[in-house]
Image 1 (cartoon, rainbow, N blue to C red):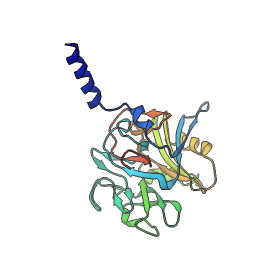
Image 2: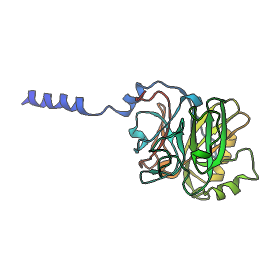
Image 3: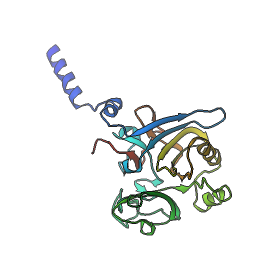
Image 4: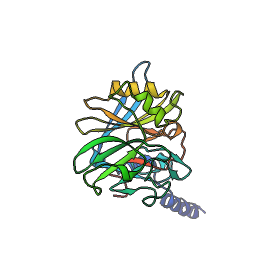
Length: 252
């Protein structure tokens, strides 16, 4: 009887998936991890990465179930991705030109963060479709849709979040964002603090260093999730269609 029990236990260990911490232990780290906690400000958890190490992916899972470092991506409904998510002119969730594939910012032209791998420059472009994205080489770029932060324009940012339909801007919600600076560094940022869009944006201006800062709001509320060796933020543990990961995941 003991022998049978031991065999069953051995089989269970072989078939059961490894713990998340064990999976993360096997991943190469290509990011710097930062936390910002200041009185009367939202907590910020940040991965600082090189744009060449970014991979956009669509797993349709809660992030904690994905063996990769990174944060949640754009807006979605069901299994349809409603924000642009394109790697080298290929949408991550389907075919080019297909609804829900990541080829479109559905319904509205919205701020889309673009890394031009040939020009080696970031930009935020307000577009409805990946067809409209301006880059040197359509085979060497990635683009992530969201809503413009307009970090460099205090006069315009409130108008832009209305025009680009940022959900629940004045409500207390968890938030996430992508921010870059002139040095070519990229911050992947999640706040589990319930905060308005204005207060989240103000915290980004306070905490992300460098000149030429710009970026986008990503999906928020329960979708605000992060996988890092140092910290896992689960939001409300909902499935998210798309993830912004840092290279070194288990598929490479």
